[in-house]
Length: 104
Image (cartoon, rainbow, N blue to C red; front, top):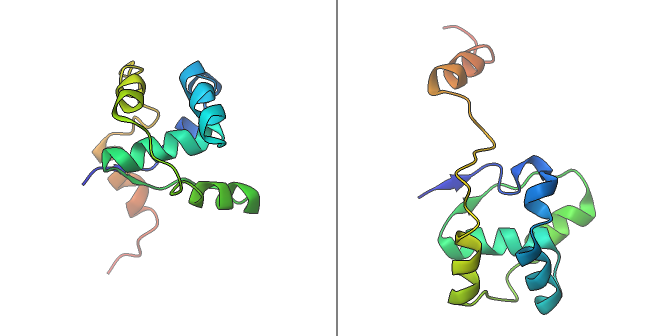
């Protein structure tokens, strides 16, 4: 399984304001973030959206009462620009984690 720890790109404005998300959000009565999260779920991706805002947390959960069509899924896939929002190497991740793990 693929995991997405930054499914909305750290709140990247360009990503969140893509017209296709706005169009689909209006169609389904959702917001752009909910459309993005729903796309990930339908792609079979495990998502970890982070928020401390209770409204955002509820919105993040409220994505199971609609389904994107295959054409809509394809339209979102076509947005891929090959940009990653998390570019830490495995070595950097391990070094960061080792700073928090007590030595034996």
